[in-house]
Amino acid sequence: MTSSDRATPRCHIVLYAIAAPVYLLRLSSHALRVFRLWRISRLGYVDCPHCGSENTLDVLSTCPRCKTVEYGNRLRCTGCDLGGTSFPCDACGVTIHCL
Amino acid sequence: MKDWLLGSWTYGNSDRAYERARRNEAQASLNASLEAESESERALAALRGEVSPRDVGRHAMVWGASGAGKSYGLSVLTAGWTATGRRLELLDPKGETFFLKAAAAAAQYDALPDDEREAYAARYRVFDATETRVTPVDLWSVPDGMSPALLASLRTAATCDVAGHAFSDLMVYGMFTVFLVAIELGWGVTVRFARAFLLDAAFRARIVERIPNERLRDSVTHLETTLPEQTRKAIIRQFDILLSSVSARISFGLSGAMTREFVPRSCAATITLGNFGPTPQRPPALAKAMATNRLVDVLTDANVRKSVVPEMLLLEEIAVLVKQKAVADYLLEASRTLRWKGLSIVCVAQDPANAIPKETVTALVLNAKWFLAFECGREEALWLLPHMPRSGANEAEERRSFIREMAQLPTQRAVYVRKGLPGLRVRIRNVDDPAKTENRARLMETFAEKIASRSMIRTNDAEERIARFEATILDAKETPGPRTTRSSAAPAHQSIDDFFAFLDRARKSDSE
Image 1: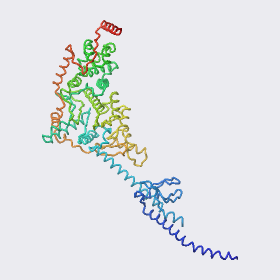
Image 2 (image 1 turned 120 degrees about the vertical axis):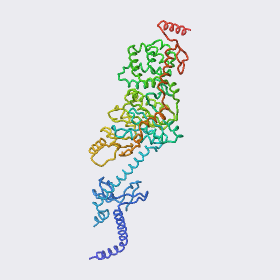
Image 3 (image 1 turned 45 degrees about the horizontal axis):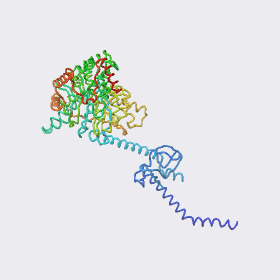
Image 4 (image 1 turned 135 degrees about the vertical axis):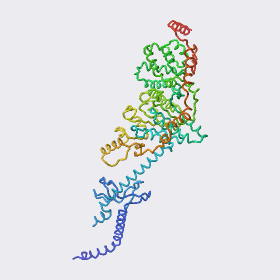
């Protein structure tokens, strides 16, 4: 066993310890975004930040990638499994970022 | 875990999202339909009276089977239109709408205080024929800016339509010439005048110098060579039949000047009601010809006027009025060009798809901005179908059910379509028909005495005036002068010797 082999776990631990706050921050940030998306999805609508009009999420929509037209959440396509995070406002057309 | 977190958990359950989306879409479509419906309701309300400036000059078509409620519907629409002081011109070859409007006018006249009745009656001008009275029609005055030849050709078309006899082109030409001469000279047309003009060369020679139009003078001079005697006699026979009734003799016999002597032109009348339905005094064919002539007059007036005057021209039984191609073309031209003069042409028919020539009805449907359709057949229903909101069912099934629905519409039920908006199923509101509560005969008597009499004249007076005029032009050597006299009058050539003498004189003057 070399000295480097012995140092590796310890180094990893140190590195993990140093990186942990960053991962924690990333995790919390991601969790927050997912929670926000979950909340919007449960709420069923998003207000446009530009014109203030209410945009319903569950509608007859077309997938921007595979062009599947289906009833359901406009951020998610069951055809290509796309999980979108933005869509254009029905009233004014600006892109609404949900995440 | 990740799939679950970024899948169903985040975006929601697919099945539930599907259900919600179906509900949302249905609600959105209902909202859109309600919005459109309220817009159509506003349009319908606008039609009842509160018409905005942009709605003036929009043509329309109304159709439906007999007894479906067209006349009552039109009564509602026109009452709203005239309530705001807009002009209405009703041409009714059937007489039903005329009687509804007349009864309503009489009832309103009775309900007014005495001091307001005079002004109310002055709003009306009536075209009708009774046993003792008739409305004088100025058939022979040329509106400013109109060609006399065009007026003569339109009058000829309307007159040819009256006769059951098929007119040859020679007969049409002869009648056109008689009418054009009368128009150019400012005279009326009577059988005696037509006979003298067509058969008496001396009479023609006497009047030819008075004709201001040089080409017409030439045609009249050579009438015997262009029109065989048999044809001229056939035309006179047709005039004999045409002008056998008193109202026809008066309508054709009065010149523009004579008409103005009897009824001075008034601008106060905004509502003109024309009854061209069959009466005991007037043959149906003549009534239709007079309706066609009135149509020509209204379109011509609108054509030559300078300002925009909101006016609704309501043409009942349009199929009767557009039988002659010349008149149909004139109406189509008007429907294309007179919108900007404020003229809204509303064509009413029972079965427009079959009763009106195809090219005419296609143009009318194309130019119409709104439709009001009562119980009707397949073709008319298909005109409406593209404007009706989709129910989401199979297209063929939807078409079949709509045709069935239109064929079975109950009375007073109609479909109102304003182009650009979804069609609306409406029920025409009940009309307060005064004739149902009061004595119809008394109302019509009030209308005839207090309102219609203002625009009608006694038949005896008119016939006397025409007889005096005939005596002046036929019995006197000097005929009454035309409106404009020719500056360089050339002598008429009574014989071939006169003609050679004229040529000699012309040759000498050329050599000098």
